[in-house]
Amino acid sequence: MSYFMKRVHDHAEAEDLTQETFARVFNASAAESGFHSGYIFRIAANLLRDRARRQKVRTDHQDVLDTLYGQGIEWLDPEKLATARNALSRLAAGLAELPERTRTIFVLYRVENIDKRMIAESFSISPSAVEKHVTRALAHLTLQARREQQ
Image (cartoon, rainbow, N blue to C red; front, side, top):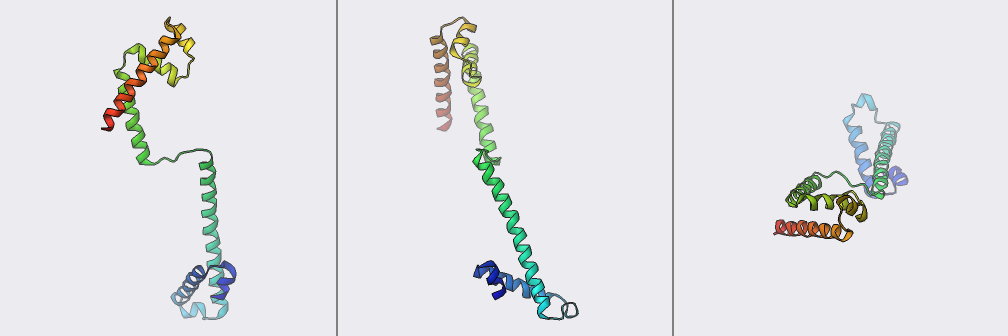
């Protein structure tokens, strides 16, 4: 126990390692071990190495996760994926209900990030008309989303 306490500085962990050491000693055949202190300390040292390897793997994995979380990467959670697909299909259905011109203008402005003036020129309308089409589309999609929540 003191061997482990000097190395892991955690009483519960030292107890667990001590118990694991004696479990391995008593599971080995008497001829194999000879039950001498060198054998017991070899088992203890091996357990410490195993513990260090496991902790390194966990730490490395956690470092990767921390790095990815810091970059704003979202994990592929099946529930999130299903919810997102459902929301996307509802959005597509809502867009399909819009008049073609309003839908096209909305997609160009909100999805493709094209400037209002460029959209207005291509449709031969004023920029304020583009804004009205976008407002109508947003109002329709918002109303549809509220209906589905109820």
